[in-house]
Image (tube, rainbow, N blue to C red; front, side):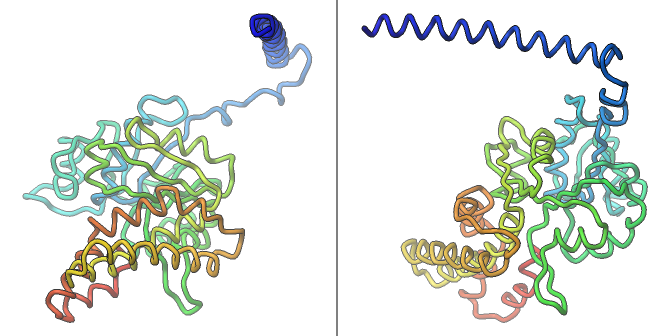
Length: 346
């Protein structure tokens, strides 16, 4: 009986494969006929503009920006989807008597912010912001929070109206109307579609190509495959989710929990207490997201991605905010704790 069923199933499978192959060949002939003008007008075929490679610009060249440049540069160089040359805006400064842009473009190393790591030769350091973003189809924002508004004001009117933005900036902006996501600040100033990338991604480990995961928050499914192709490598695995606001707010709130974890370390409360703080902190992150992210339902599943629990664990054990909390708890000096006023920038 089992043999007969298996044989019948195999026959049915072969029959379906043959039909699928015939259907594929028919579709191929139809497409070729359409593009040669036999049955459809020329408007039905992709134009050169639609097929043009995407130009990528990285706005920022610090530790995290340079680590991302390694990934983006390598992926752009081997894909026809993107232009090979990737511009990286660098705030010009002198390092050992030489311009930082000159060092990056000749030595292919950001000796100040990511020493010891070679950047792909197709990553070009550009000192002028407007030159860097010119004709870019994808803008990757990876700059300190306090410079976002200034940068946006500078490039407004000088970028493609259909450019796609991606923010790697973890934090929120505080204004007269309350808290605002960084991606919303950029979107409102530039009028472009914004996405975000957040996760347990310590820059030096990413640059060393140690395995990690990350999360791209993308409200439009159409942009997901493009951004995943740009960012994913064998050791930098990308998951795309639609709850972009939740992904981004995780990147800000985990810093607060990390300070509490630092208090536990500074007061020698032990691992059990620290684990409780992390768990309770995660629950409060979910509760806050449900209050703050009202545009769409908040799924607890998003917090199980790299942007959520993974980034929280990494920050609570190895992040700078944990160190701040520990230092304050051990010394009691307000000087250490005053750094918390800029915790959302870290």
